[in-house]
Length: 248
Image 1 (cartoon, rainbow, N blue to C red):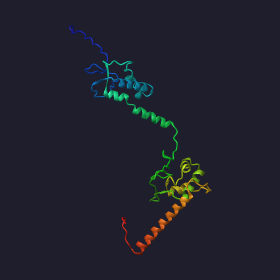
Image 2: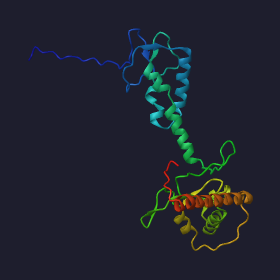
Image 3: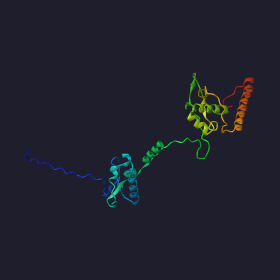
Image 4: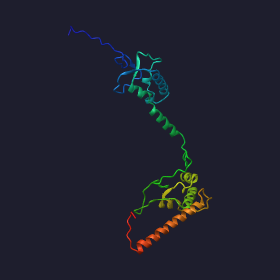
């Protein structure tokens, strides 16, 4: 025991990773793997690193700021000593996530405007698989499915607009007043429309933006189609007892 001598341990300074060329990665990210060789810095690469450094240091988010990596970047590079690992360079200079976060933050804080027209100025249609009132597709009334129907008559449209005005329903008014419900092909469950317009005093509303003449022609076409189907069923199925396939 007396012959044992104390051993002095030397503290080694932590160095940035280098390769056989002697260059060190000035933007080294210790969370990565498979670094590969340290590539020499180019003028374009150095300029991009400096630009990204300035952008990152302005952020308050530590995951974006990467202070520990930014501190490694010297004021002026040494062509013989400094370089970068390709994975480190790609990770440091990629600001896609940063841009997405900024865009999401701006979208959350900016007021959303209701749009009824697209960039070409044409009317945007409402979802055909969603009820205007309950915002659902499937609904059952007394164990029977209540299917979605499209708003095609002036009477239905005016009853909805009248009820929305008396209820001060800003959501439905925003849809009904900015563009015609018929033109936007609004869909709803008939039971939902009845519930929405029930116990509402009927008042005469001003003429809508829909063309009355076009509406009359549409209703006439529906009537003619209905009578044609009735005549066909009476003549071929009932009178002649003909069996029709779905493919006919």
